[in-house]
Length: 510
Ligand code: BES
Ligand code: MN
Ligand code: ZN
Image (cartoon, rainbow, N blue to C red; front, side, top):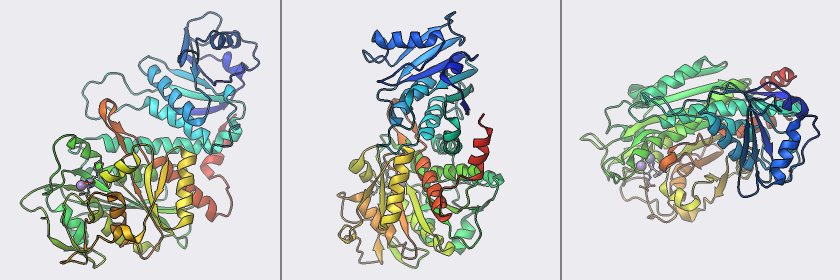
């Protein structure tokens, strides 16, 4: 994705040489003063109801001799709030991506970006996120594709580019992290094995201040991660435990630890899943993909903060060696677990990674997992389920969701929800209480491994991918995670000083 930000008046944008000029037009659009014929054309489009009237979201002109741009597209963005802009601009970019366009200017002059203070959304993330979304195309396992990835140079023009610049740098890094997450989540399970994920993590070790260690079955056995190993034992693919450390602050500063569920395929194991839609269980490493994506963004931004990423990764398969319902295993924490359902495997690999997190004396730990179908029933596909006993941390995550547009919703952790986690044969069972409140039961299980630190759990079962004809990864919750980590870093510094990367970006804007 090739996006930049430029200080350019509406007048100058109208007269700039470009293949396409996209003008975003809100409902209460007032044509900015311009000497160009474009202003009159836009006004006409709105007045006649051709734009925004009868649901028309876009009007275009091609090779109009009055305009300098070869193609002009006016995009109606409803009230002009960040979410409306995001979806309209993404659709516009998608429609352009089939043509051979090389340069695109996007005018946001008519949006008055800073006007709507009722809404916390970050404009830069909305604009850049839309361009990423509109230009994304999965190609890895296709020999032919309809369309091609959008390679045009996109320039967002605003009167106040300077003011937007620091956030714009963040938005670009977030978009690049989202692209990493989408790519890995979308790859089929035979091309995204635990070994492949380990190799991707290793490759990210070339980012500045990033150290990566990838462990295999022998090291994990040595760590006594009996719960994680029990899930992996049904597959011929060897497990991987990925540890990434981003060191942007002195060693004395406690790190944020991100833990991502990396089940590269979830058949359910011996408690096997029904066949319909089982292919979607390739997305069961969506947590891992989002943690990799967040580390990519953090590595690009170089904030003054320490971040550790932990990714337990394996397949969940039925096999002669597979763990059986009723088997009891000993987790790294020492707690024994009766595996009553081998399909509740996410919590079994996460619990050992959470125990491992203790050694970092973390500021806090956030795990991210496509953990329960019950969370999809509870919240649908708009908001990620967020579980956190610490009010300040919960507040920061909610806020990061609002700012980035990558929303979450706080869920309860009352003791009563965990009451059914009782076993006659082990310290705890891995399921209990039936279907009702299943997302909370899962969180209560994980909570038993978090006594040593502040902890939040993000259940992304409903938000990590979309099903149907548009099947594909959303790259969520990369925007939420990165925004949260940057907020945490700014809080540590006791101010909201921009990162060096964003300062550099501000300087570059002319
Ligand atoms: N990966 C699934 C959760 C899932 C299912 C996410 C469907 C998205 C869509 C997880 O490993 C799982 O199978 N959970 C079980 C837990 C149950 C056995 C307590 C579930 O949700 O059915
Ligand atoms: Mn499962
Ligand atoms: Zn799973």
